[in-house]
Image 1 (cartoon, helix red, strand yellow):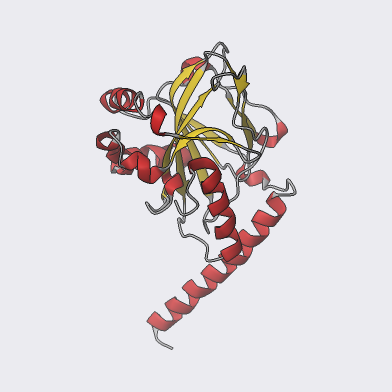
Image 2 (cartoon, helix red, strand yellow):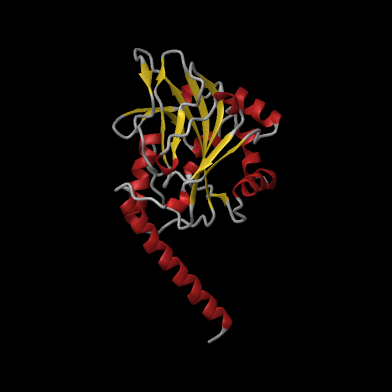
Length: 252
């Protein structure tokens, strides 16, 4: 057997094992079963150069009206999917998220040398989330309370929440994590231009409700150490439902 053919067989076997493991993970995830080895989180402060952060702040200030508001059992809040975000006036500043400098910061913080953004076809790679109490309402969160995310990636899935604005009355972030069953509160002074990076399909997390006149704007990012999307049609269909709830577009 040639070395090339042997390498192809090994790769195919790796893919098959990963598909089976991902299917099992998503199944037990819904039952609250997670890995104790995937409870880490990282807070990377000043993750963007100041001019990029300032440029994004200015750009997103005019995007609120273009976001999709969802108010259902899936989610409550406003969001702009990655494809729309990349076509907005924020586009000149978004290239930094694909730069070697940015990715090396993440790899240094996590110790994962293969960590990389998921493919650009995935709208969750880089999206924009708004949190504020809609007119006529006293408070809003994201409607999900404590939860874990699903995953469609064969490698480990890492969610990133980059805070642009956290104009609230609280001393801590509205974002809360619960690794190892212990609630983690993030001091608000750490938040501006900080990236909270965690395995959202293993670490319980939520966004506490905002009250009237509070405002929160974040960029949601998605990474993996092996960013290959599953071919499992059921998992892909479920992700389409999530995309519809967040961005109003099941094929996003």
